Length: 431
Ligand code: SPV
Ligand code: MG
Image 1 (cartoon, rainbow, N blue to C red):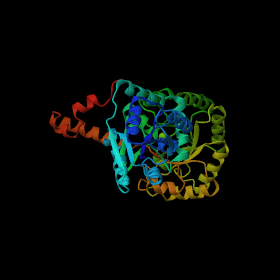
Image 2: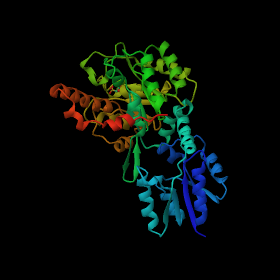
Image 3: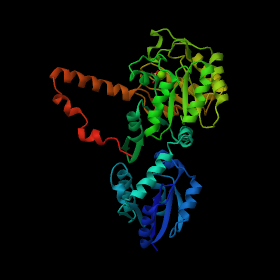
Image 4: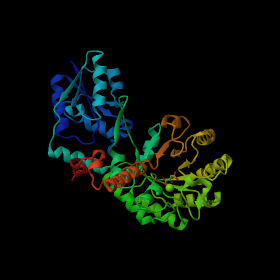
């Protein structure tokens, strides 16, 4: 009897899956792999059923003889252990980023004489609707909010990119690249005070009020499912901060990062070129505790951002603050620097990790941009935020286009570098 293996990463069974099982039965004994929570989360397919519930669901399908857990997105663990005679899949994996997985599987099964069987993917309105509904469920607050903590638990480093609109949210949500057989993508979005202010033509001085910031968050939430970290500036008055925590939790935001400055806040990348005042340890700890006290779920994170290195107060001050903020209840620490080299950031992380092995560390490598995610992870960093690169890449492109149209008195000369009209009118799907 031949073994036929197929991997499912779904929370609902529809006619497409049943069709795969029927085709598989014709070839031999059917074994289903339930992709593990860890692999699903890494692949941006957040489960709405637990791993055990999925195994039970797959078991209940007629014709399925065995269900196992598949831990590796690339099938390596299953292929090694089971050497299935056939691996069967819908032929939709021949196209786009998943084709990298198919290629990898083909090479592996060839080594022992196995075979990949692609069967025509079942397209139907009912299936499309069911899959869309499942995806949309993930944008609901109760799923989205907890995703950041889940990611921190399972990823070597969580990658976050700035978004300031529905469109940039979609870029963060959907961009996938193939990298050595792996599919790389961003894990979530940062709603930066700098970029949120800049796209509205305002300086980054806590001028945008909370309603405006929340409008941006909501625009992004409308079209995405990935977790959101809000740049909360100083957090404002503690009396106001606690109300905002409740609002953010209710909306499904996963974390707020607040910085230990007070008075008129300016962007940290000015460093000591402008007057900026750091709050006392006690003042900032009180704000953190008030926020932690008011929050209602286990999922939401309040991350404390330390400005000591930015304000040249020294490493000792930065570390003293870090431990005090964690003691006050902070769920994570963000350490910032505007040095070109990452040395002071790495020194901080190494020293902090000697005492605290688990509080998540967040960094924003805007100035020290030569360091890789892998190197940061080696020093105990859990979250890397690419805080402004989308805005900084869009602005020069738009400015150059405006200048060239003025220069040539027509748009023909800029056309070559623009998104084709056909593509812009179909870029956003209709419901
Ligand atoms: C932001 O993106 O607004 C930040 C990070 O706060 S930084 O601009 O580096 O201060
Ligand atoms: Mg900011």
